[in-house]
Every structure is written in C-alpha cells, then in structure tokens.
Length: 429
Image 1 (spheres, rainbow, N blue to C red):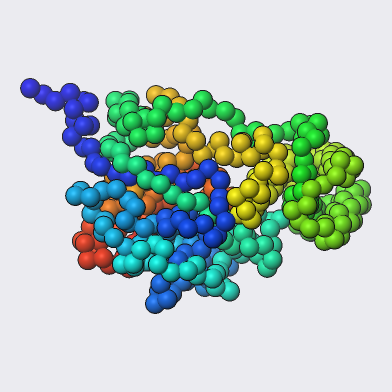
Image 2 (tube, helix red, strand yellow):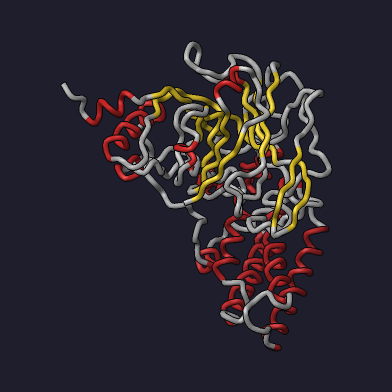
C-alpha cells in the first residue's frame, strides 16, 4: 500500500530540542549554566575568539560577540542525540549580518560543566553589537561607556524535545509541525500587538507612564541627539540642508545637551517626579513636531523618533532587570508585561506551519531547522548545533524575527569533538 503524504513526512521525523529563553533578562550573577548573552564561563585555557569583521567597508580584527553557552548535561537526548552527554558549548559570532551570509563564528567545547568557572571578563577589543558604526548598531548607545552596547543581556535557557520534519513549503508538513510544537509548548496564547512597536508619537504624548527613571531620559535624549547630529552632517541627505532646517536642528541639539547635563547630576535608577515627567514629555513632543516641519528636508522621520523611544523603554527595563530581580518592579507594569509577552508562544495559524515562520522566535538544537532561504538544504547532511531565530532578546542586531542564525557541524567532526570547522549561516526573508 502506498504511503500517504502524511506518512511520508512522518518517515522524515527527527528528534530535536527546542531552546526557550526566560521572558526577561537576569543579573550576570544568576547561576544559570545554559543561557543566551551575558558573559561566558570560559575555562582559563580557552581564549575568547577573534576574527576579521567588516562593517561599512571597514575590515577590522575584533573579539567576536558571545551569543550562547549551553551545558549539554541540561539538554535532553540520552540514547539518540549525537551531542556529548556532558560538557559545555560556547557560541561566538560576528554581530554584523549586513551582506554576511556566512558571518565569522567560533564554537568552543569544554568537557567541564557550565558552572565550573567564573564569568570571563569581556576583552578590550570586543566588537560593538552590529560592528563599529554598523547598519544595525544602536546609535544612542556608546561602546565606550555602555556595557550592553557590546554584551547582550543574559537569559537563562530551558529545553524541550520535539519531532522535526523535513519540508520547505507544504500544508501537510506544516500541520505536523504545528501539532508537534503544540505538544511541546502548549496551544499558545493569543497574538497581541507589541505595545510599543510602530506606536505613534501622539499616543506617547498622552501616556503619563514615561519617563519613569533618569536612565530612560538619558537614552531618549541620546537618541534624539544622535539623529540631530546625523542630520547636521553634510551629505547625510540627498539634498543640501536649508538654513531654516540647520537653525532648527541646532536648537534641538542645544536642548538635548541641556537635558543630558541634568541627567548627569541624577542617579540613573531614580524616579522622575511628576513635573519633570510632564516637562520632558513636552520637550520630546516638541522634537517630534520640529521634525514634522522638516519632513523631506532631513533623513530622520518622526516615526524614527517614536521608534527610538520604544526601544529605549524596552532597553531601560532590561537594564533594570539586570540590576536586581525586583528592580523592574519600579517600571510601569504594562511596559514590563509587554516586553515579557514577546517571548511567549503565540497560537499558530496554518500558514505559519506551512512556511515554518512563526510569530514566536523558535530556537532549537538538532533536527532540520528552519530558514527563509536554502541553508537547511545545503547543510542537510550536517548537524544543527544551534538555531537562533531573530528575537527581541538580541537588541537590534538580531531582533528581526525574519532572520535565522544557524551553527552547523559535520557529523564526523562532532563525533571527534572537533568544533574547529563549525560554520554559521545567517538568512533573512
């Protein structure tokens, strides 16, 4: 009897492991042995890897971005997994993805447990996230003074087994994929829009929840100043800057510098009193209105100003969470809940399964993996060490859910515990 299409897909099933991160980051001192971001607990004999990385036509040798540490004793797979049962994997990669289908990467292996050593301090040549002046770099973070402009936030990981299937675009395969994911993750939650993504400036004007501390004011003012300075730079737009626009930009620059001076005198995590809140929101709305009047005269749009504010709010909450597990209680609950919710498994639709493209970032080890292009086909005979889908956990350089970062290894090399030939692929839709 001929096999049905469903039976044919069932025959391709491979056991794989879903990698789930915590909703919010934790302090660097958190005892997790498997985690995204933070600092690796490297054995002293292992060097932090370096590579030549190109950003905006500049080639430089830098220490690579630390992406993940995984203690293999925490990964299920006894009896079927080709991975070692003990030991720790450390994943490093260039965080410059523009024009890089195969970003420089290194994967290190130690036979010791993930908590055997203290955090390795970041080297002085650690690359800024997205590279020096890279296209996906957050311009209002300063690599010279902002720790998290080079080091990702730390998220503890947990693991769940599921069955992965080999298909690219297929309705039946998609149904099977959704069934398996729902077995592992549950039916999912309703898809709720990101409270801050694509939010208009007019809604921020009416929202009295911000700014909730001086760190947020600092980041928002820096974001305004970075846009103003770029717009004042000759050649930043396709036509010359008018005298009127130059006068307005310089007025905004002076105002931003004044706010930064106030910020320097205040403890970053201190609350902002009601009068200052109202004054700052009024100043920010004035910036938006000024940019509205300069529309098509400069490169910055008002939507960029509002988008930067949403990013700054999320970034500030992450910073608060890394200070202390209870520090985020000082941020507005709606903002915290919104950021945490972005990591929750959303109820999938049939089309999501068919195209293996889900609203939730699905990270995994082993199996076939997913990608919008052909990496999973090219590396069909290799072992998928780790797949990291674009995720808000990775600030800007890898937050696009349409992007997928893979780490591949030859099966024979894995059996020999030789990780020197691991290759990375980065695909975006």
